[in-house]
Amino acid sequence: MKKGLLIVLSGPSGAGKGTLLAEVRKNGFDFALSISVTTRQPRNGEVDGVNYFFKTKAEVEAMIAKGELLESEEVFGEIYGTSQKFVEAKLDEGKDVVLEIDTKGALKVKEKMPSAIMIFIVPKDLETLHSRLVGRGTETAEKIALRFGKAKEEIARAVKYDYILINDKIEDCAEQFVEIINSEKLKVAREENQQLIESFK
Ligand code: 5GP
Image (cartoon, rainbow, N blue to C red; front, side, top):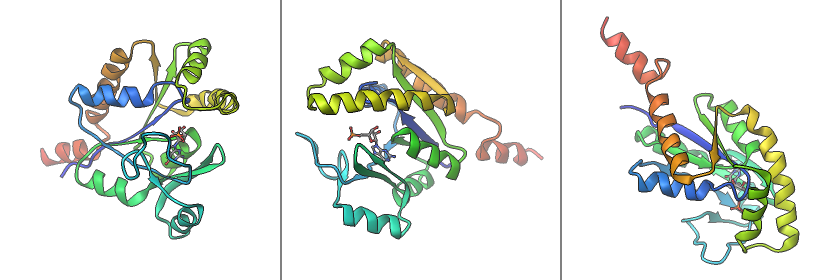
């Protein structure tokens, strides 16, 4: 059975990660989105087990101690982490798995799972990034300033990624996202393609 691809998507707050994934799904590309655990409080409308698994600090620390997280990071003073079991089970089922995580956590995943495809999304310029952060209206001014600083830090790490998507038009980004995945599946180095070549011997 073909294993799924592990796709890591990062980008600063306000770059359009969520919108991109919704658009990609709308276009018929099926994937499993990893649901992270977090210690942060749910925002209005967020549902436990859908957006995140909302946990206490003690619960997340216990998961880390038991080695249940593929990676974990502190972001804006809260802990976020990716469930190893979820990711591996989905990949084994042949499902492509998307992790929407910060750059530090993403680079840890790449170290552990070098075949991960690293995609970074950015808004088209700094002004757009700023207006998107303000426009979302879910955060206080102080938090927006914090996210803006963090955003620049995140973008600096984009050089370590495999692909960059510039979110001018989200429809174009969604098309490019699927093109990346489809090309990656054709790579000779992929295990199933190696097996295919072997089968002709
Ligand atoms: P938010 O609180 O806005 O949902 O997410 C804040 C940041 O945490 C975003 O950059 C998001 O990508 C990142 N994040 C969400 N889940 C995880 C995770 O499991 N691991 C890491 N390292 N970052 C995460």
